[in-house]
Length: 358
Image (cartoon, rainbow, N blue to C red):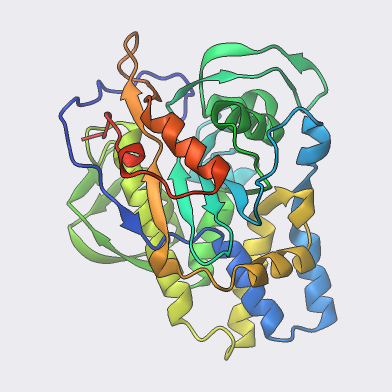
């Protein structure tokens, strides 16, 4: 992925490939970390400090009443974004030193937790997907008219997180209950706080754009290397955004495994260090913008087994006008969103994407 929103990408490969399933993706790693800390009986002053770290956005107020209905069950839907914001010196440096204006949704996941909360599915929305952006209010209060054929990741830069939520709701018909966002620096600091993450690199990676050079096989990555790993696109697949989605999903599995392998409850200092990094990095909807709310939400998901989670890429096809962009593939995308709206099993055919990214 380049820093420029509309920069031309390489022609995506049209070679048919079997869609790959990846299981074990944590839906809200940060929430789980906060739960670990809460369970450790942290002192009130530590709680207050962590609570003050969290940034909240009032999504409900921004969107009003013109939204899809809530699930008829106790299921929940979250929108999880990784932002490529260049705000602050650390984010700017981690973004390659670019002066790109605003920020984009570098990674986007719609996470569905069905009724009973014993399993979950995460749907990755490719950043290069062309969508119809609905009419939105910008952060400054100005009205932004609706527009067709807009790159999904540009919506954040143009109108902020509430408009991203509105765009996802309009394209899917799925009501988003909660919003979670983490930026470059927050991601790096979180990985460094847990001492790095070991991933099984699927092939040699030599990305001249980012300077990331890795040989195939198990590699322990620090925060900066981890960020480059989940953002690389020149070093994997056909060079498109689609190719790196698999790396992102694989890395999050490894990240969760690393957290679970550490005795955080037995080490309050480690618990606090990780939770401090996590909460400073986190922006949520106002309904989750407190340590208490995050902990309560995490407790409600205690029954979700990470090993039973499934990740899916939104089925997309190469755009007929610009083959460097993709559009939602039908009928697969419609079937996928319908299953999530109705809290039913996702059909196997709804998981198959014509565009695979090589």
